Length: 255
Image 1 (cartoon, rainbow, N blue to C red):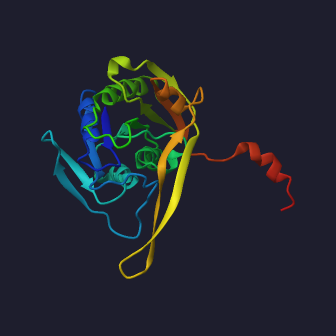
Image 2: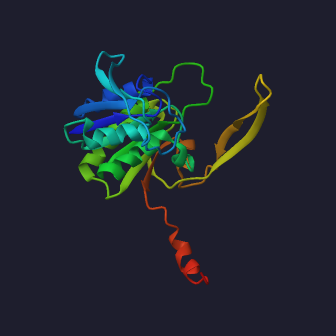
Image 3: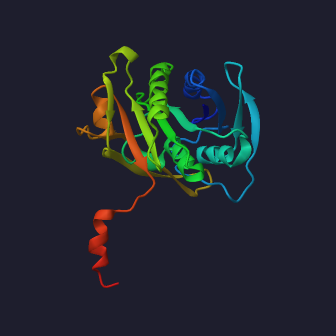
């Protein structure tokens, strides 16, 4: 089993190292991740400049590859030949905060997994920890890493439908307090963004998109509903964004 590990927080992020350690218990692991933080980068394909890749040493002494591209670039590079040996599975994470609801369109963690399906039709899993915002102490990623190992094992046993990848969110709890697993749908993320206009020292305007931390609605059967109740959320995602329920109505319009 050959597993490619990536993330969107940067190759030296502690969440990636925790994930790499547990994936090595399952098979051969290759690592290629961004050299800097690409959080909330969305789905990126770098086409108008060259991509650079260098070898780095992780905190445990093992080597990895770091790219100046986005998380999705890292996966594309690996699947298009940068990693010579065929890859059986791509695992992205562990993100320090949850990726629920509409977050999946912004998340570099999730879109790295998405790229595996697009570029190579390779099964993929995105793993995120529901870490609290502005947490001062170091996060404990090992419960999420253990959960990731369990999910990867099951995916290799059962396989995933073609074109489907998994978005996994793990509650911020000790492993023994996690109640189990739930297969969920995307929930509703509530964004409270605001635009902050400022002036630079030369009097020119610039803008920050800020606001309060997003919340979510803990509806039963959803990703946030599951983690709010202490369960691991497993959401199967696909790339077909067609609104099928709207097709019949739109076909009746006089175009």
